[in-house]
Image 1: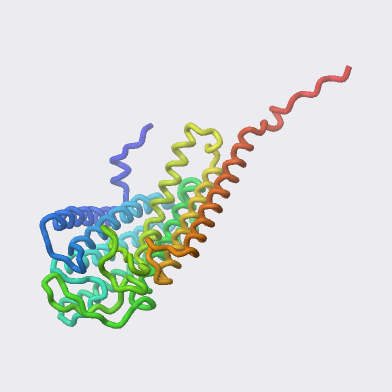
Image 2: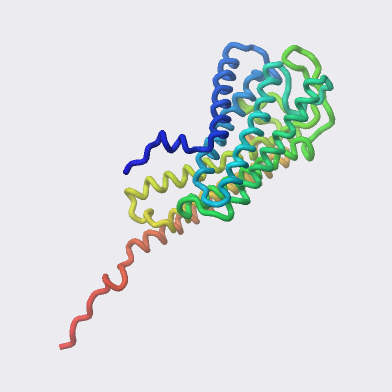
Amino acid sequence: MRSNPVAEVRSWHRPLMIMVAAMSALVVVATAGLLVDGRELMQQSIWAKPLKFGVSFVIYGATLAWLLPQLRRAKRMMWTLGTAFAVAGLIDVGFIAVQAARGTYSHFNHNTDTFNVIGQLVFSSGVVGLFGVSLLMAVMLLFQRVGDTALTWALRAGIGLAVLGMGLASFWVGWAATAPRTVEDAYGNPVSLVGQHGVGAPDGGGMPITNWSTAGGDLRVPHFIGLHSVQVFVLAVLVLTALAARIGWLRGDRVRAQLTGVVIVGYTAVFLITAWQALRGQSLVHPDAATWIALAATVFVTVLLAAVAVAAARRREAAPAWPDARPAREPVR
């Protein structure tokens, strides 16, 4: 019997899907804002940040909404954690959208007007909630399987790396923080900022779309890479599973798990390299010799591991079955 895609989607975690719907609406509003609203913060549309956060939470929230109903252990606790994530996400991104509509900053804003002071407290609770819930989910995934071995490890590693990516946020107002600086909001009014995304260079004037710094390190780079690792890993599993229908040596669960592990190793190395690069105050687009060497080593090791896994799988496929395929010994005459 064929599965019903509509029924499967309806079985997804409902509070998370409500959050996804709200984020999708925000994406539409922010896209329209980019086109019709000329207000800017640091030479970038006020709607750029809500748009990026909206898209990110649509992808991540939909992934969790699909994942949680697949779990077989502690289902009630995981459902509660998913609900908490949805609420925290709505609080977090909701404040970002409201501040954008007001033409001012959501992150690092230390202005003393009543709305901002209360809003920052609420915003901080949302950030802590997102990190805490994701950490608990990562721990819970260590104690249960989801699908085959490849998918199980993809989800475990992906959620774990997402937690590490979120954890980098603590550096934004701590290690990477600079002395308070004054900037202008969309109306030219002064705003006091304490903390920043950048290391070694102030925020603003970065790359198109992402706004990642081109003058110094930017912790948003490894944050983004870590946050969306679960989607990359699950996509790798889906691609390997689809290819297994045509490639015989990919049909074994073992080889798909090994190749998924290779993707995890390579991707994690990229996450660590970009975090190391950012913490040294180095822009993503201006890598030094040490960064190039680390990237080259990552490519070499990843390709080598993949080649070893593929070669072993092909040998297993070519090996004669035992004992049926063993040639019979001719009788002695």
